[in-house]
Image 1 (cartoon, helix red, strand yellow):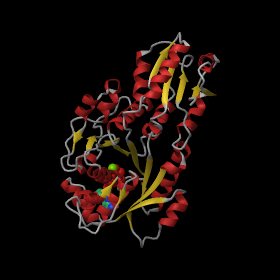
Image 2 (cartoon, protein in one colour):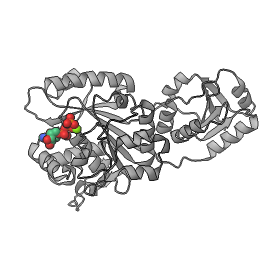
Image 3 (cartoon, protein in one colour):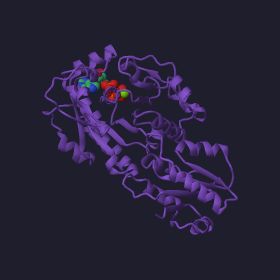
Image 4 (tube, helix red, strand yellow):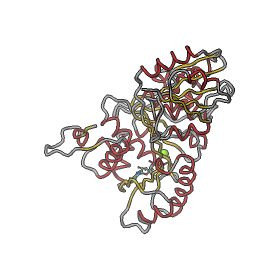
Length: 381
Ligand SMILES: Nc1ncnc2c1ncn2[C@@H]1O[C@H](COP(=O)(O)OP(=O)(O)OP(=O)(O)O)[C@@H](O)[C@H]1O
Ligand SMILES: [Mg+2]
């Protein structure tokens, strides 16, 4: 069967001519259309040939494309071998790099290799949690959902990244004592590999969650590119990555392209709901409405502002509610043992349900009493 090939970003017809002779179905598009191709439901060609001979740069959307469609082969045609760009491409999951002069033989061999190799990396999912206001319970939710996922997924790894600048609380919540932080990762994105990253994260003994803790000092280089590199790295090495993001951290909010779900955490206070509306509006515009979800923390059924009101003001459905239970939440915080590890609390069930739903996992009820794993024992993927 003829291969479907999409050429992206070519200013001339040279690549098209080289491919024409090979019985392939060819489509050409400008780089700007790559974003549409990268959308989760977009029909994929067998191979994308990305022409960067003129631009000399990788469009960030190629990262999104490979994340959403790891099976789509990507061949880059460049003016030359550029080690920096090649590493970036490799991290993005690009399969082949061809430098000029490119012959029909080179390109067909590259396409042959790309289409015969099945992707080996399982790409993980990233979930971001952003508080519409300080103190609403964002870290509590991020930590507990991470804990629930780490348990549910057993040997698959779960990472939590605390993007707060100094005084991030995730380490305290997880009873962990980190030595390094997001700052160290961010300043060393050029040398990110598994061993180096392992040395930066701390594994919480109580929960099994890996934590890249908040920076206790100013982060020198919190730019979009480095954050994107870090997130991409996390997604290729962890099944689940959760981000605790302050709403003031604009660079991080700009780098959520590869994130599966963006949760805005609000409560039932008017000021918070209004803030949530503003943040949600911006993020919906940027990342699409389906990815932006609202969580109501410390939910009180009797409160004057109900779920309907929140939805109306924010303009997105309330996807999850977390019941209010200050004593349990505080106790867990003081012990450094997340509520998600407990049993029989409404808070625990809410966090577990949220984790399963986000991860697309299904809970099967059985007549048997759950074993020590509680609900986790009933989990089927
Ligand atoms: N569902 C809940 N019910 C009752 N209290 C809660 C709940 N979730 C969190 N809390 C309490 O609210 C306080 C703030 O929680 P948390 O630190 O998670 O909020 P935050 O939004 O991350 O705050 P910050 O803006 O400081 O990062 C803590 O004392 C916590 O125990
Ligand atoms: Mg917090």
